[in-house]
Amino acid sequence: MSDHGIRVGILLSDGIWMSMPDMLLDILQSVNMRRESQLFRCDLVTPLPGPVQSFSGRKIYGDVHIEAVKERYDVIYLCHFWGDVESMAESCAKITPWLQDQYANGALIAGVSSGAFWAAQAGLLDGRKATSYWRHMKDLAKRFPKVEWQDNQALVEDANLLTSNAGNAAMDLAMHLVQRFAGEEMATEMAKDITHDTRRTYDLTLFNIAGLRQHRDSSVHKAQDWLDSNYHDKVEFNQLADDLGMSSRTFIRRFQKATGEKPTRYLQRLRVEAAKHQLINSDNSIKTISLDVGYRDFGFFSQVFKSLTEVSPREFRRRFRPGNS
Image (cartoon, rainbow, N blue to C red; front, top):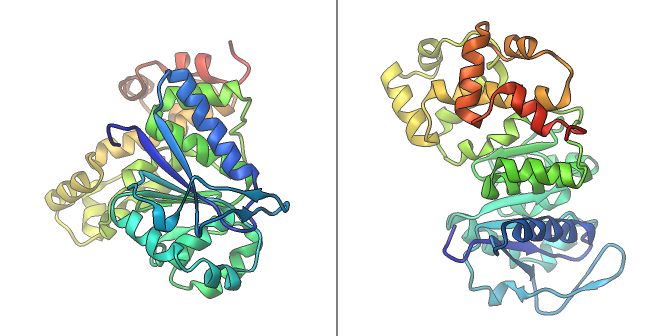
C-alpha cells in the first residue's frame, strides 16, 4: 500500500457484466465513507482508447486505457464477461503484457468468473490453482492445461492470484478484499449491513487467510495444502517436514520466511477461522466447535481464539452472527 491508499485498477472489456465493476465500486466506496478517508482509489481501465460495450449493450467509458496507465496498482480486478475468448484474446492483446508487468510489480490479481481468462492468458496461472465460471471451465481447461482448475471451489487464491466462480462468489471476493485491506471487523460489519449472507455450500475458511499464501515457495504451498485439508486432526510437524524432504529446523525456517508465521501459528489460524465460520453459521455449541476444529482442551481453544481475534468465542458469536444485535 502506498501513501495514496490502495490503488485498484478495474479492467473493463467488451461483454462485461456491468454489475461487476459497479458492485465493487459501491463496496469500496462504502468502506471509504465509513473510514472517512480515501483508503481505496479506483480506476476503470480499458484495453484501448474509447468505451467498451457491456453484455447488456451499454457503452462504458473508462478513466484510463492501458497504454496511458502510469500507476502501479495494488489490486487488478478482472471483471466477468460474456464473449468468445478467441476473438477477445486477439482484440485485447495489450492486456497480457500489462497484467504480467503489474503482477511482477506486486499487484494482487483478482479474477471474477470468466475474468480468470485474462490471468490465464497472461500465463500467470500456469502451475497454480484457480477457478472460473462453470460454463467456461471445460474450455479453459483445454486452452490452459497447465492451470490446476478447481471446479468444486468457489474461491481460490494461489500466489497472490485470486479467482472466483459465480455471482455470489464475486461478492465474497469483494468482501475478502475489504477484509484484507481494511480489516476483519470492517468486512464483517459491512457484510451484516448489506445483509450479505456468507452461508454457502462451500466454506470460506481458507479464503479468509489467503494472504498467507502470498509467496512462491512451492514446498511451503504443499505444506499449506496439507494443513488446509487436515487442520482438524492431530498434526505432527516433524512428519510433515520429513514428507517434504526437509529437516524440522529447515521446514520451520522456510515456512516462517514464506508466510510470516510459524507452522504452529498458521495451524492455529486455520482452526480459528474454521471456528469463526461455525460460530456465525451454525447452532453448534462452542465446546462442539472446539472439538470439530481440533482442540480437545476447551480452555486452550478459547485462549488461542482470543489471542487471534481479541474477543472470546462467545463474544464473537454475539457480535457477528446474522440477526444478532
